[in-house]
Length: 350
Image 1 (cartoon, rainbow, N blue to C red):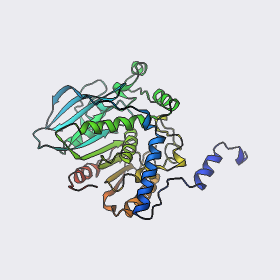
Image 2 (tube, rainbow, N blue to C red):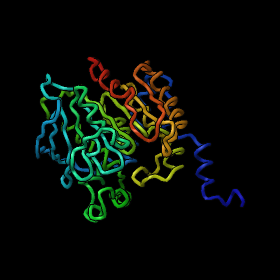
Image 3 (cartoon, rainbow, N blue to C red):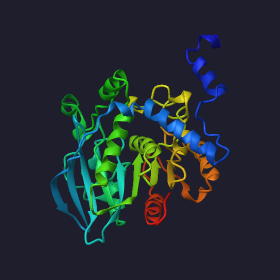
Image 4 (cartoon, rainbow, N blue to C red):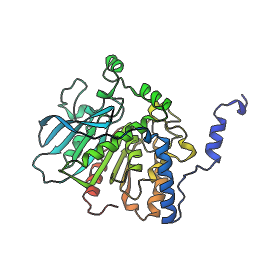
């Protein structure tokens, strides 16, 4: 077969040879500010964030349950004039207010329940060793004295369309959601980032939250939402991303991934590590398992070194950490929980 017959050749050649417009190469603070402003504007356009309309949050509490050491509320928030977001809010009992807060973003699976110890059938999980790849990480955060809000991402759990709900508890609506989004000029990532921004808006309405100390943690598809949200919203002060930071080429373009991962045109402007560089100088920890089959660890290590360049320029290398652990596509937690607590407790976060 002639190389010229290969339908991917043009894309691979241009990927290797052409400079991406917003590849991070700032030499000083002035360069960084200009790059950051331009790339943020373009990223907002690429994910289609402007498609979504503002509405009053109008939070409503559905129920409150007490557990050993913490309380779980279910709340309903309004994202836009057409869309509601169900979410859990976890907070420690008998704690001093205001609290540092974390937005916890689930990945693919059956939705927000999997982060708070609830099985698919709605019953509470009694055996922690039974946890899946997300390891009830919202519970790990609330145990450390943080208020945690766990929104249902669009396309999962209660936010699926009725046909997918009828097919089974783990059937997502990502495909139909993504196709509609793309045909309407936006993206699923844009939908989920908008929702996450609205969840941060909600935290600003709570009197028991220190609004200067809000973090965000997500895995896999929740890591994608965390990455893009933190890149665009400076109110997110501390960031943990598990099982996602990589290169687009080595992950979602090399392995069969859900269509919700794709942003048309993004590689003309930046790689995934350029998006992550927008988080600098805020504290960022990256988790990646050595046996992760869909976000390969060697590409994660390469991306991490590229991100480090932005932190070095800003003299913030102490705020960037990685946990390259022995494991699969899963939460580690070996460093991430204490990283979140440490940096949210710092009095000065720029």
